[in-house]
Length: 111
Length: 121
Image (cartoon, rainbow over all chains, first blue to last red; front, top):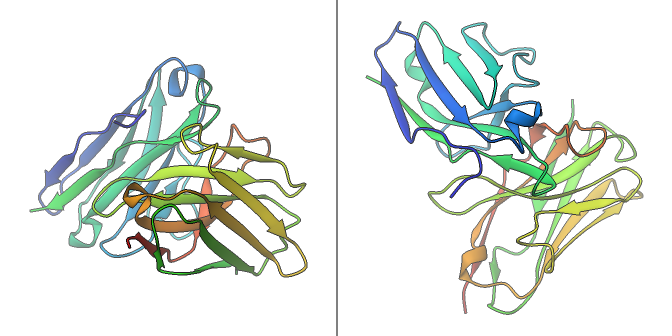
């Protein structure tokens, strides 16, 4: 069981907007530690998508955005495209474990 | 452009030690922290631990008694050793650059392509 909780799956039609939640506790997200997001396309290594809550690395489309509030964070994807079909993971720091922690991952299906 | 590449045996026997090396190009190891992450087949990501540019380390508590991460700055490589492995340690192992400055602000970019290590007799 992962320290950060994500829905196992989400889906949306091309062009639509979807959000993926990442729920933590008072020892990680709720303690104001930053949240980061990764995209893992099938058969490939994870790729950084959002860092420090809401920052996009160079090359990541502005269709991807992140937010954080309280003990939760969210990844929003607008204008869904077939190429967005992938697994998405959130990551933060947990003070109880004294280390980085990941969410269990969310599989995005583009209908 | 920073690139990382994992290398090591793809098959390890139960009770033996898993050893992997990550070769870094495009940046000196004497900057940043460096991290190992693994992913069992069909499952999610697990942070294993990091080593800083100064050699300080931090490990996942569940693996701490079996893990060692070390630096070889002369070769621009860092390594992972995991002892007493079992089938539960079968996973794709990734190395990554850690952008944290003091361990509680880590995020990982880029990642190596990963290497599958199977624990089996």
